[in-house]
Amino acid sequence: MDYDVVVAGGGPVGLMLACELRLGGARVAVLERRTEVDPTIKGGAITTPGAEALYRRGMLPAMAEVQRQAVDRFRAFIREQNGGDGGGSGGGAAGQGLGIVGHFAGIMLRADLVDRTEAGLGDAGPAAEIAFVAQQDIERLLGERADELGVDVRRGVELTGFDADDGAVTVRMRHGAVRAGWLVGCDGGRSTVRKLAGFAFPGTEPEITCHQAVVEMTGAEDLKVGWTATDTGVYAHGPMPGRIVTVEFDGPPADRDAPVTAEDLQARLRRVCGVDVTITGVRTATRFTDHARQVTEYRRGRVLLAGDAAHVHSAFGSQGLSLGLGDAMNLGWKLAAVIGGRAPEGLLDTYTRERHPVGAQVLDWTRSQVAAMRPDPRSRALREIVSDLAGTVAGTTYLTARLNGGGVRYDVAGAHPLTGRSAPDLELTGAGRLADHLHAGRALLLDLADDPGLRALAAGYADRVDTLTARCPSRPRLAAVLVRPDGFTAWAADAGAPTPAAGLAKALQEWFAVPEGAVTPG
Image 1 (tube, rainbow, N blue to C red):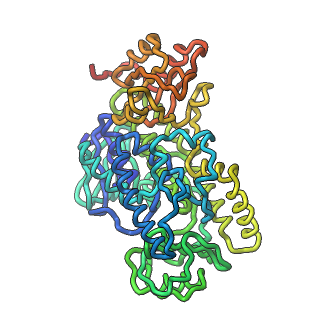
Image 2: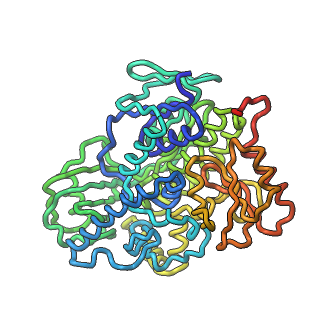
């Protein structure tokens, strides 16, 4: 084998997956047809699950610096527009000081209306402070991390085909081929890997045409900042100078690949906003629709999919990037464990089982936003009701929890409320925070009750599971937590729980047992 895994696609999801595989000891090559980061405007924010994933791998300081610069630009834009104070002093849940936590169909969600005691909203630690980090910045940061970890990133190289059998995959490129144990398609919504492998890709057809661009323009004084619904569609202005979005409900574009021109953008912006704006230059522009599709399975033999290759939807809510990073985190440690002989191949079955429902929820989330953005009277009545709900604590809390994946719970055996959920970022006495101990991509038994019996059980898995004994004053009843490498809880127990050792033993066996006959290091 030339590699254990070939990853097709070197965007954020492909790079994240490659990094996770390297942490697990796999030999990885990434094939990326572009020679550099695509400068075309894409998502300008990340939701909490994606920020959590990067935080757990030690990338919080770099994200925080990127966000600081983005917030400075946003505040300068606000001052330029209306002479305001640059965004207000209200603290957002993401700590940006901008007073918002996101939007639903362009209806802004105020930070001061979020109940942080709701499950999944108060447990992310410093990751909850991160939101305004653009996709290109994340791709750049992950590219640097991939280089540090020794990932073979081949830029300017495109997968053209492959042949898969029971033992390996031969991946063909324009100038040669490589042989690997596994192939993962992270090559976007028009995935070549998905098409060639024959994955079913059902879903709903598009009904809108959206344009997003950064432009130079005159006559924009009457454009409202933020998202605005009109009689002909929806538009957005900001949060950076010249950034515009138009949403029109006249069907999908006749040609998605046609160049986006200044004349077309100007006509669409005038039609939607009713302001005689003149666009004099286009820095970057793209178009997208609301088609929503998802593969029925994420694996076919030795070929797997992650990110947009597995699911596509409109960009409303900025959930796509975090969804893809979640796929990479879930798959990376499992595939690396199978390759390294630390887990049976059947572990990969849990990838589709856990991630497919999460993707389906995001698709429905974006479909519902389109329903609330249509300009017809029935949809506008619905929008008014949603706006009213978003003005309440209960409504904003619910919408924010959905936006930030607060309801995600994998089907993991165990009755404890934490089981199957993203592990809370516990603050530990004298030992930092939980995420500080997940940087290496290994599982962790966190012993909060100084229980030698639990530690002895984990010692039998020392090549796969780290152990840490500490105290957590904020969770006095919590006795122990077994955290998977992706940061999700495999098992947990409270003080006084009956037979905790039996529960831990079962979880260790389920997730980290070595297949019979496998040879492991040491």
